[in-house]
Amino acid sequence: MIYPKSPIQIPDKYNPCGTRAAGFGPRGLKPAAQRGPCQVFVIVCLVALMPVISARADQIVTNKSNYPGAKIVGLHDGRLLFRGADGQIQKAWLDEVELMIVDRGGIFDDFNQAERFFAQNEHERAILRYRRTFRLSEDFWRDLIAARLLLACDAAGQLDNAVLNFIRVLNGQFAGPPAAARLIPRLIPDKRNSRVQRAIEQLGTALSGDAGEAQRVLLSVLRYEILRRTGDKRATPAATKIATLSFPTSARSQRVYEIQLHALRKVLEDHVQPTELDGLDHAIRNCPDGLLPDFLLLKGHALLRTASAREDIIRASWPFLRVAIHFRDDPRAPEGLYGAALALERLGRTDKAIELVDECLAHKRLTDQTRSLAEEALARFRSAKTP
Image (cartoon, rainbow, N blue to C red):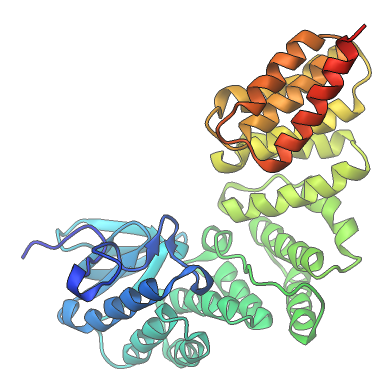
């Protein structure tokens, strides 16, 4: 049998939305809030088809592909290992795995039911079954099920239970920091409650123990994120620590650098010190490509705000120009052009500043916020040229 390598396709007659991947967006399974009625319908179809498709093998669906006829063989450094129908070993990060249906029987009947409930956004029901499976699981399955519990608890708004399983994943023999860095809880309340209190206490206990460098870094990052999102006054001193961290390779992820970006913005609003700029440079060297423009823009604004000598102003323009030149089709490119124009204004190069602002305003990815700032700057530049 030849197995398809693309996500499961639902024929048009069963899918009122047309033939397409069943409810999957460009970043994987869409959250419930982002799914329309048609997308919910096709996800239910996908789950219903699982027992038929995977009658004699495991079924794995990631945000990149569908693997019927597969076999889960392990978990290593936070990535699921499975043998595809073609016999080749495949790897997938745990946050990329959307569905797993396991042909093992026994405790895995509960696991499979939990997966179905999770796919249908019935998170509370999924949590109960994941927990039953976790208590009886062994070897790499404990780390794998802890990761699924983390995701389900986070989606259900159970921050304390999400943190408990985050710590399990972080300390897991088979998951560890590489997995935990990608699974940092996202659904955090905007004010303190009993779940928030328990989550902070759990993190404090873990930090007071004998944790390795990567573990301590990730525990600190998550603690800061909870403090920040809930408006806790302890977030302010914690921000300086997070802003100056250089993350070990095993603790790096998009989510980690998003949190550090928030910390750096907070710290650099108040003052620009060499230690914070060093932290910013570390982030620029190591962050994912998708966040690089944000860190460069932050550096440009920080340097421009503190520049006094001509050489300092020129140096401040460089990060802005890097964004404008190297990310020219990105929505942040217009902000790079605008920032560089501000630097040129201070250098007395008004004509060139006007050119950059004109280019900014003509950019196809211009945001409303940058448009407003650029139009205000353009009026100022033209006024300065008027005798």
